[in-house]
Image 1: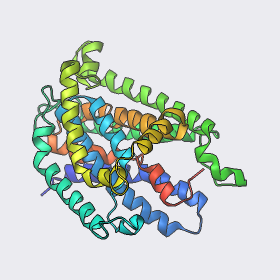
Image 2: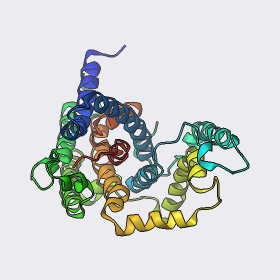
Image 3: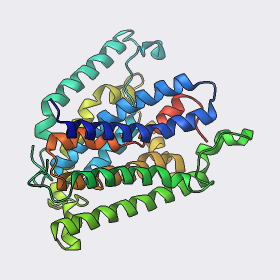
Length: 133
Length: 208
């Protein structure tokens, strides 16, 4: 499907990006010479997560045309961190809800994703976009 | 292969993006005082949290950011023939919709992101003993008064977005790339892990 040029470009991009992450791997390796495998897994994980953030950030930047909005989103995401997908109810012993704590958390994640998907276009619509879809 | 609406060659755009990435990462490796190293002394374990280390690295990265933005500005100006002032406006560095227009659009986007993270926000601030204002205040003070917090919440986001969004996206646009192409490929240059700190904290052994 992709032209030769596009394919070469894509490889170049992915390679640069990996190169950018490899320095984290290098730093990890300096400190943990015996834990290279876990370093590689972390690097891949980080690669996926930051790519997902980057797609959204670039999308918002193109559609709102202002880098400061994206900076705020970035700060917020750094602050919140990765979502918890596991069980959390054991941290709340004695709380009446019991295991419902977990169900509410997961329902929150699902509702968050669904709402995000539905509102992605209308809520990022700026009056002075850098580019239109 | 030449794109009719391209004002600069795609190769130049890609090369400059690679250069920006290299500069942003490489500037930390120029001097021993900002370069990561294998721990030798026990005190090295705490090196990532050393205010001096963070301050020097922040300064180096700020320098790299300014250089990157100037390079992109120069390319935008020359390719479009706009004045310096208009060229920097076209890079999306400042809101063009007025203060209130910006507040409105920023509120919409933050509402979207807040909604996406509703589970996490609930877990962090509400579940259990109720509204955790004290925790929020402590977080604020960590940002305001500690170098680690300042780096994670201010220096990191500001410099990374300026370089990887405002510094790169205009180049991709001048190269005639499509909306979808830019959204998909530009983040691939984003090599500086934004969650570097989260990952190292996760490993419980920060790099020094």
